Amino acid sequence: MSDLSIVSVETTILDVPLVRPHKFATTSMDAQPILLVGVTTGGGVTGYGEGVVPGGPWWGGESVETMQAVVERYLVPVLLGRRVDEITGILADIERVVAGARFAKAAVDVALHDAWARCLDVPVHTLLGGAFRSSVDVTWALGSAPVDEIIAEAREKIENRKHFSFKLKMGALDPAEDTERVLRVTEALAGQAGVRVDINARWDRLTALRHLPWLADGGVQLIEQPTPGEQLEVLAELNALLPIPVMADESVHTPHDALEVARRGAADVLAVKTTKCGGLRRSREVVAVARAAGLACHGATSIEGPIGTAASIHFACAEPGIDFGTELFGPLLFSEELLQEPLRYNDGQVHLPTGPGLGVELNMDAVKRWTRN
Ligand SMILES: [Mg+2]
Image (cartoon, rainbow, N blue to C red; front, side, top):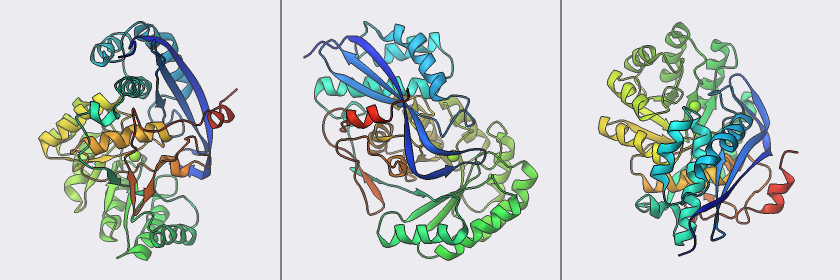
């Protein structure tokens, strides 16, 4: 086998344009910044991982700029000279040097898995115990356009058999107006497709108590993180009140967070992002806690590019605990293709790429074109 020792680590910030602005409760983005981390072995094999947060530091405090600084200054010295198959030991040593910073650590964890799998000439899912399925369902995030345009966008996706489940972001508008808007979309799609909402922790307890029952009565299928992440007692109160599932996202980063959500009955479903949780290994620990507690897990996204998305697909296809679908649509929001062969989406699903490592190859001309100067 080729030399597995890590001889270099490169980081590159990309700004990849989107097909339309993607709106969150507190920000909107026209391009998604991505930190590309490449780990190269003495045998000349390079594995890639992505450091990606949803649009900027508003979500969890990290950004591509902070991730680049953490990786270059603190993680690279831990990596150099180690073997790419020493992931357990490397991650343990990284914990001694850097607390938190899970999005940055995820980029390194995925790059190590990709490089190791390529050295072995096997897919990444083999390192996770093997895939037990070859595709997963993908929910589509509808934009923040006027209601008629949103309904038209959803109908187009259904007619072309692209997606059969939709998510709407809430929290940027007046709550009553926001609720009215979502109910109109839900009613228009009733019987054709499910609608779920993500409030991104923007509502306080009273606002949530006032408006969430209307959303549940109006046919919304699932409520994602209505209230602040740390207020688990509020989330538990809402979960007990509502007849539909509540999903925790901002409330769950670590296996211990998952344990607390389970203990308090704060949610029925956990949003598991391989980026947010600190990589493939840590995500697996979060899912293990959820499974033990009888909670479902959703394969969620930070709007990763094709590398981060491929990593999450390998994870979801090798992890039976991801049993509540996915929203691994990131690359479909990008107006530029970064891969030589795009990921395959059809019939409401995304397919597990084949081939060594993550099974995807970057188009280096495209990477160069969108590299930040
Ligand atoms: Mg969310």
